[in-house]
Amino acid sequence: MPLIKLLVSTSVPEATKNKVLTAMSAIIVKATGKPPAYTMATIEEGRIVMGGKNDPAAYADVRGIGGFTPAVNKQISKEVCELLKKELGIKAENTYLTFTEVAASNWGWNGGTFG
Image (cartoon, rainbow, N blue to C red; front, side, top):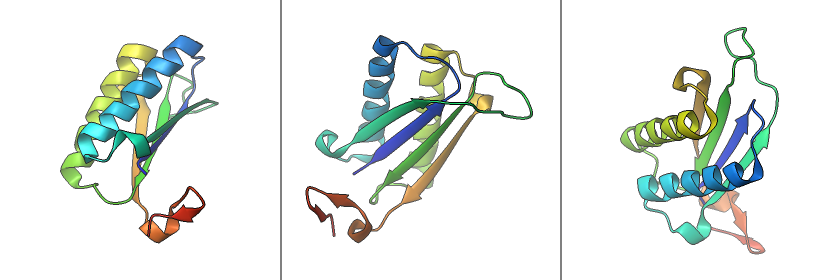
């Protein structure tokens, strides 16, 4: 049920995509304590202008059912920014993240919902 959707403005080789997706999933699992079996990570390439510049940038949309606190959000933000800098060369100052709590009844899976 945790989901991290990443949009990046750089071209990412397939092998690197898999590495980043696996690492992002692990970050979310560690920070929220949610089961890995229910964690999803996606990555898309697209155009981003940040601060009026076309420098490499990223946006991560993090959603889940519970588990988000200010401390958890800061941990996820720090670790995702470090990962993007290391693997994709995207600076932390060019990365935005948002965190959204979703009601269990509004999260569908396996033909039903979690609540």
